[in-house]
Structures are given as structure tokens and as C-alpha cells.
Image (cartoon, rainbow, N blue to C red; front, top):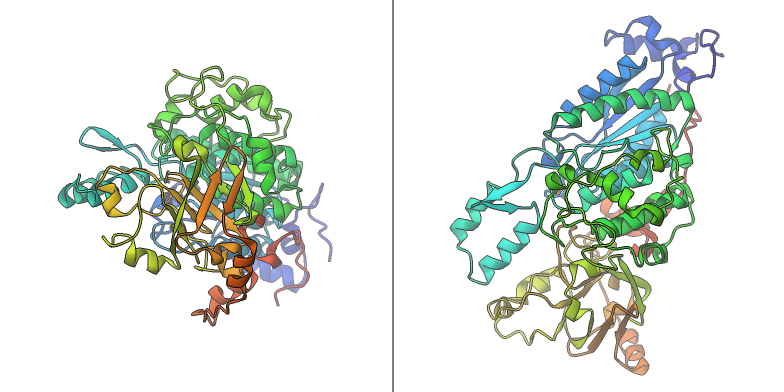
Length: 573
Ligand code: FES
């Protein structure tokens, strides 16, 4: 039965609430048990607020409060806000399950009578998971990040979440920091709710969704505890109602040009390597032609302008005071496609036109970059036929061209058992190689690629070595670390064939990663049977192992690539 009571363009929610039959009765009546008056079900945009709040995700623990400010804006603009839970991914507590959350988000949006959605996230994987899910439904959507934590301070020094942990942990292992000081520092790192305050994965993704045009300007850097974060939430609530009226869905904003902008911004901010798989996966949901090599193509020759940990010294709170992402994008100017549309309704050009760079320390000028070429480099060679990546901005310049003997670890357990063994045959020229940590292998492609250095080398003052794996690394980490080797070892990639003592050559300038072992020898090793019984016979891990794609394709599940739109084919009862 059609909706005779809803004039103008038919809202999606009227497919549920506009029916004057038994089904419409059920949809409206049960909602009325929450105290909604009857007129709210006629011609009012229903706005979902997809919240990744959870007590188990400390970076998102304030999102229930932020949601209240979004609600204010939605009510004010004439919409009806409905908060609904998505899965919540607490980076410090659980393995990455981005794809599972993206499925939950997609199905929750599609299955419910909502006309537009605010994606409320923060901690690392929540942002890409929410955007992947929303992209596969493609109703008007806007991202609102929870904002970064306030700067941590320990004994008068700035302490960055994540980065300082890696530094302090290595200092303890090198005998330079006592365990008492290490534990005292633990309480100083997080002064407020919010995501990690370094340019880790959460900050990177908050910046990249802003660069993609799917947030209001200023989203990335306003601290979680700052009242202006609440103002942004209010404005986001207002704007999503307008977006429904304009029928402005993600596919009209997230174009190839928008992804090119995001890659360039990622280079300029010294963003996390995790963004590589996330942007590839989001683009895959939208059917946009955007591949691994585009990271090199668009990011090449983009200077590093932002001096934030882990590559630099400042934190997100400083970044906000220095002008935030709009100031960076204004500085990049002609390197970006400033005509790209945004959810503000204005092109990117208008969003950054009045941005101001405050000081020269945190955000550098284009003619005074921290580094001339900061893009993530895509490597290829017989060790990574489908590609691998490295972030030169976080690496040691002296190691960007390096050949050395491999020290191989067959698994993360093997690594942990032997890395500090005084008898381990390793020196600073060695190349640490870790297998079995890709999407299928771990499973979940964990952030273990920034392998801690052997204790005996740390004690000798060695601070960096070439490390190679099929894993990811935390966006807060640093070092000459080659990641995302594809195909991964558990999928039969050449990484599985490396043995200790083999010479491995890294040449970032020429984008090469080679295993210097004769073809005949590699063929002989490949012929040897490898049996790896899976410990995962059921549940999500089994589904994931059977369907996850390799890193160079974005590590999405094969059956999630693409979109199913917003249509619900059958009634629920
Ligand atoms: Fe949540 Fe870093 S652990 S953002």
C-alpha cells in the first residue's frame, strides 16, 4: 500500500512507516512504545546514529555522550534521531575484525527504516568498518569522529599514545628505563577519552575521511574533551537531515578524485600504513577503480608537512591548535582536486579557503617541508609479486637501500621465543623476516610487523633494522618496516620460502624487494610439502580464513566487495 500521507519525495523510511496496513501498524506501534508521537512517522527523516560506543573500547567510551549532541542537531533540523549500536572494535583488546563490523553496520543500516546515517566512530578500525558498511548501502551518510585524546605528559615530556609505549618498552629491554618508571608512565598516557593522539591509524582515518569529503570540516583534530567536538556533533546532526533532503549519498562524494586527495593527504600528514588496506576496501565497496599502485602514483612527491608522532614530535591536540587538517589541505593547494564534492554541500575548495596555519612548527609550509617525498612506497619483486609497502617517513634513511642475511621466524610464537636468545645469529645488518602473519595466516593480519629488535642489539645501541613480514603494523609505530607482503606466506607466497641466511635486498628508491636465491632453489623449496593444520574449524575465524582477500586488494571478504543498495526485498514478518 502506498503512502498517501507523505507529500513530496518519498522518504525511504516511509516504506515501513507509510503503510496503512498490518505491517505499517507493527512498525509504528512498537516504536510508539518508546513514546514517539504519531506525527513523527509522517514525512520526517529518520536518522540513524550508528554508534561504536563500548566500555570495552576505551577510545570510544564518550560516544554515547557525543550522540546526544548529534540528536540535538537532528531534532532541530526536523529529523528523528535513532541511536543504534554497531559492533565496537577496541584496538587494545581484540584482534582486528573490521569486516565483521562492516557486515553488522551494513545490515543494520539496510534493514532499518532510516533515511540517513551518522557514523560515529573513533578507535582505529571502527571508522573504516562503518564507512565500508555504509558504502555498500549508499543512503545519505556522514562520518563523525570521536576526536583524539588530550596530550599525555610524563615527567614534563609529551607522551603519545602507542608511540611512547613502543619507545619505553624498548628502553626497558635495553636497560635504560626501570620497570617502576615504566609502570608509572602507564597512568600518564591517556588524560581523557578519545582515540590515540599520535598520527596513528585512528587519527589517520579521521583525517582521511575528512579529506574524502565525507565529514564536516574540522572533524579530524578537535580533541574529544573539547566543547567544540560537541558543537561539531550538533552541526553534523543538522547536516545529515539536509543531506537526506538533497539525497546526497556516499557514492556521489567518494569518487576516484576523492581517493586521490586522501592518498596525498595521507602522505602530507605522515599517516598510518593501515590506511592502505582500509581505503582499498572502501573503494572496493563502491566499485571505484583504485588499486595498490595508486598509493605510489598519487602519493609520490607529496611532502611531509605535519610533525606528529610517530614520525615527528607533536600530538593531535597541537595539530588542532595549529590549524588542523583544513590548514594542511589549504597548504597542499594545487596538489589536491579542490573541486571534489563534500557532504557540507560545498566543494573542498570552500572548506579550506579560510583555513589558517598557526605557526610553522606543527604544520610546515610547502616551501619548508619536513621531508620532500613522504608517500607510502609500493614495493615489488620476487619476494612480493603482488606488492608490499613501506612508509619511508617512519624509516631510517640509511636503511632504505640495504641488503643483508635473513633471520627468519616461522610464526609470531617462534619470534617471541627466540628474539632475545643471546645465541640468535643476528647483527645490525640482518633482515628480520616474520612469516604467517597475513590476513589468513594469523588470522586477521595483526599489527606485529614492527618486530621489537633483539635485546642484545638494543643494548649495543642499535635502534633500527630492516624488518619484513606479511603483517600490518600499528600506525603509532616506526622503523624500516616492510609490510603487507602479498601474497602472504600462508597463501603460498614466496615469503614462505625464505630461509635464515638467504640474502634479501630492499631498494626503496627503485621500489624493489628481492630474495637473492636462484630460481631452481626456490622451485625445490616450493616442492617441499607444507602442512599447516588450522586451529580454526568454525565460527567467524573460519569464515574469514576462507574468504579474506590478500592485502593488495584491501583484505576485505570476497563476498562483501561491492554494494547491495538500500532495498529490503521482503518484510520481516
Ligand atoms: Fe584506540 Fe589507538 S587504541 S585509537
